[in-house]
Length: 234
Length: 234
Image 1 (cartoon, each protein chain N blue to C red):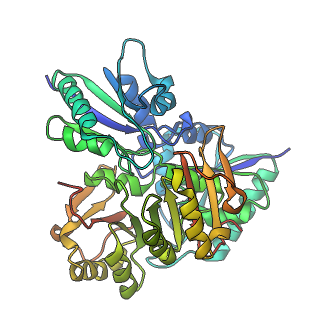
Image 2 (image 1 turned 45 degrees about the vertical axis):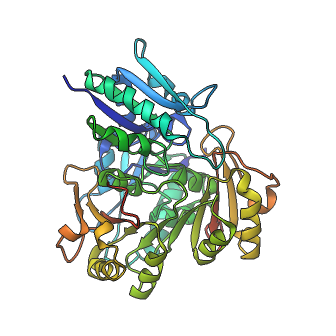
């Protein structure tokens, strides 16, 4: 009797941006697992809530989500143990993943541990990258432009070097790094070509020019989009 | 009486990777439009076929799809005229877009023309970028890696410069440029760290190490994924 683990992208936030496949698999699961903060609601579960059924078991994989830190190995070790045991006992296990599981997602750490112990199938989802571009009102990249995805925690000099070369860029994981990124974009003359997007696809979605956003920090679910030619929003 | 145009991502190919929102909007449309080759089926329509209803009007935006060439302005001008007229007459118009509308998609050219003439709403979809990463069995990018998306038609020297800097890269629009890209990756010592993915999420999906793929050209729906550290697939 062999179960299976599905790692399922549930999209960027709007519950309607879940795929038909994700909805079907969630409804079919014996055990639904999802990342969650140490206390409080799981965003992934909130997105998927309408597809959960009575009688399904749930497992909140609680982890400390701190700006610039990655959860400890022990968190993933323990979660992988529990999920592998369930699959090996015959359960259909669905792990809910915000956005897409393999785009800077924490599911990859579970995947590495689980794939050697149980069948694992990954289902792609709508990524925050695409959702933020749509929210900004301009294409992410066009024609033969190079698109660079840059995590904001990188050192200032590396950020500057990467962004100096970029035609189109998405800057992710902003958090407390926003002042550093703002400084770099200013020095490169790119600040006026940058859009700030927060909570894309949710009712709380906010889109402004970077120059019009005065926050010193940004929430986890935010992104900057940069177009060197500045024509994406024209 | 005012209609609206929706640009709707239908995902990478598996009809189940369409979002609930896309499915609902397609079913609600008066007019469904989609890109199509000069002769034959539209891939976007094939993906969405099960959501079309009797009595809906359809409009195939036929264009010459040639390797390395972008369709002529006249194609988009004429399509935008027809779609804007329908919306202005009160129609709900849905334009089907392969993958995501704003990730190197041709919808952006319609968007630029339509947005000044009618209400236009864009709905993000599952991108081939995420689908190919899932198919490859390894994350697109992790932690603070920089991810670079590189169109293969770029000149050899620029390709080399971009890929020499990349930690994780996705090389798109391969087509007849595959030998050039293969040469560059070989010179950079990255060929062994590269996966070739074709027709991700379709029954015809193919995934191999680049070294095991002998084709001189690659279909439009293919991609190379490169990880400098080579650990994504370990």
